[in-house]
Image (cartoon, rainbow, N blue to C red; front, top):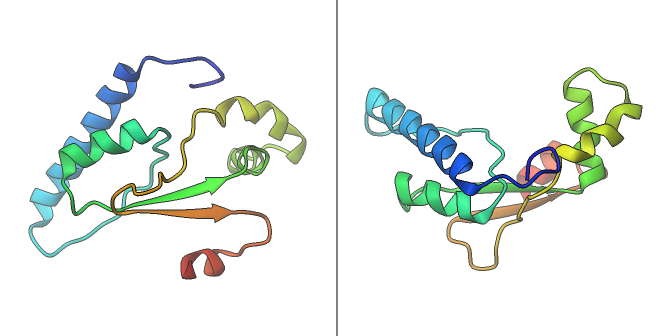
Amino acid sequence: ETQGQDVEFQVWDDFYTQLCFDVQRERKRLGPGWDFAVAQAVYPLRARDLIRSILGPELVFVVLEVEKDLQAERIAGRFGMPLSAAESMLKYCHGFEGAGEGEPRTVGIKVDRGKTIDTMAQE
């Protein structure tokens, strides 16, 4: 879903395929021995499976599992909006699937108000 509306997966398929091509191009440009991270919200498991199929089995996903109200607050803050605007950001917080049980090379980290960045990094 995006903005509370269902979106055909083909839209995301095209987007993530192009993202993977960018990653492959950078891997080739940098050459062997370089690891890097891509920060991107990859909501459904189906999208992670697609990315894995293109980039290979060495890929690791770190999935941040954030409650919708906290996620909405952080989105509002990122755009310089007051905390009171968080409710209007809830429409952007749907369709997320957490790390699946047995999902290969995927780490799920629960994010809540009580955790610091250092605490979560140690998980």
